[in-house]
Length: 158
Image (cartoon, rainbow, N blue to C red; front, side, top):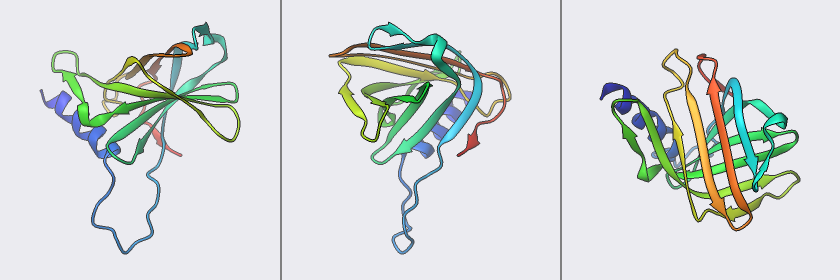
């Protein structure tokens, strides 16, 4: 239970906007990047695993939202999850959030696709053990999937 609580607390802290800093100029929270192995990347139903960079990023967004970002060459594939609906499994230590949209950015403006269904599952990247991030979403343009396993080292801010 303690492990899942840590995951839930960390995810919500990343996803929820800071409060009480009205006088300071707002700054974006850092994007946290984990190194490891990209096991699978499917973009609009097409296998892109060979072009998947061996890192995954997570970024908190306003409104209790978190984005997990996979990289294919110069293209970013972001799975946006609703962290206010965070759920987890106490036995495995894996938490999950429903995916609400997928963003594909290869130029200046991202293409945002509404997810018909989807989920991102993840484990604690600060445990000292390899962590996973696994996202799948079905959109009008097809299925998007990203699967990653970290090297066990803590994520780095970028």
